[in-house]
Length: 284
Image (cartoon, helix red, strand yellow):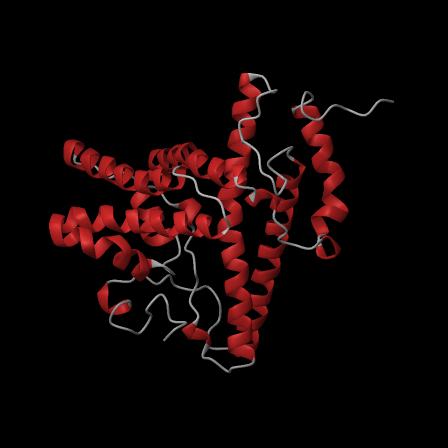
């Protein structure tokens, strides 16, 4: 039960409305399931490696000492573009890391411990393909810490404010959890609290829109709304992470890095062309 943090098969999970994504992997054929899991793990590894290689190139951001995503020496438009690129990279890197770890755990559990493949459903369900903030967090994102957030904030606030308190408290519990995670590495930043609690207000905006217009947020405009919201408010969180030096951490060792061996020169060339002030071209 210590490892059943999502509560699949338990009252606190699937017994209380836990969303479990359907899988595209063949759970009836162990060998095929293992091959599909290994393929997914490699794809995650490659994406994490490339994204982390990109972050390492950014002055300040790519160091253990940390640096702001808003690089002062860049012109305003380029500064905004760089902040967006770092935030978007962070938004892909986090689920990539979690997905890689989950696939490794899945492979080990099914191959070595002989778990039923059906006991390992997907961790994510297209979070960046959703068309509302609510769908992103409720169905797209992982539910690993769902019960933790309920206990830290959801249930206490529900006791006083009902359903609204449950929603606000759950995001506040998430904010508190991630703030304490930063504290554990010797860095604290109140912007972490701001980002996660802001998601509650984004969801309330969507509910207000539905009540006012009779239409739920969704479709192509909903996708655009989610993208703008997450890359906008996400800058609050990515700024906190990068100034804390998280972007300078080693994820893939250099001897295992395909990105550092093969993609690095192309990344440098692209950055030199786009941000010549930050990455001056080498003299001929």
